[in-house]
Image 1: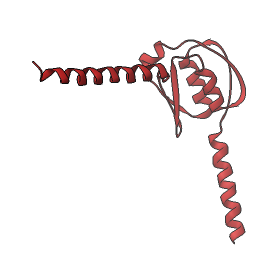
Image 2: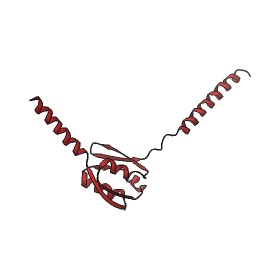
Image 3: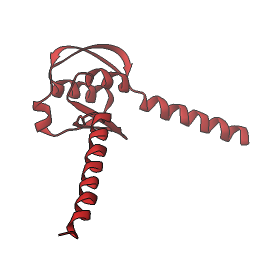
Image 4: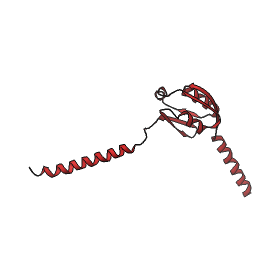
Length: 130
């Protein structure tokens, strides 16, 4: 009985994993993101959530993939786009790409903080000595 339970569990987990690992085949040249999203939706059933204004900023996509996993295909599609994506359940949320964190901004912020702190301390010394 325990062996049957273990076998059933492993079979169900395999079916679940293969369902999520959808294989996509695309051969497109200079296609819009909307048309690519529609073709991926037809092949995998994945929905795309995106603001129309963001699609206006998207570049045309050329892609040629055969039986690739959804994550690989999405990585290739969004490689040179000003957009990024997040997969949640059976939906892909498309958002504007955030600028990368820069150490220069961190150093500039710390320097500014130190300068303002010095100015406040220096100014407070002279306020009482008129």
